[in-house]
Image (cartoon, rainbow, N blue to C red; front, side, top):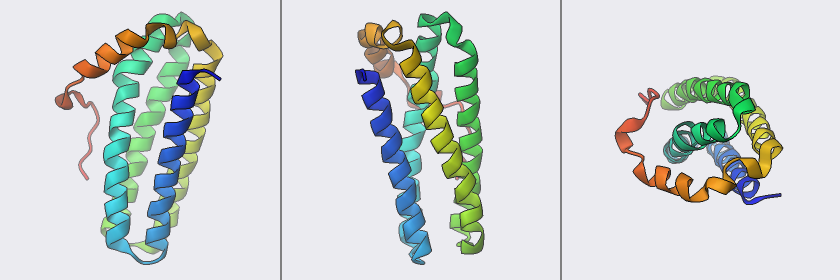
Length: 155
């Protein structure tokens, strides 16, 4: 397993665990805590998605020509995840526990499927991709601007 795999797996497991914490708080009726945990999760996750969308995916596409369909699919997954996050934010805001599981289940399933696919895509191409361009990736990350976000996050 290379460094990229370790980084991806770590971040993905961290976000999966954070979402479980939101679920536990909501299930216990601790809505303020659930909302606080959700806000923290979303703020961190937004940055994760931006790094992938604006730095890693473009670099991967540049390095591995045959990765185009995979990267398009992963980007579309991010759009779907963002919509599902909006749904869950609404449910949390209105403290509708009866709809909480109905909103959480597809989000969690989408995240798990996306994470597994992304890890598989990145590992399939291995060294030909990002590790060889680590310094360039860091430079691109350092040039990211807060206003570059392309998604609507109105919650």
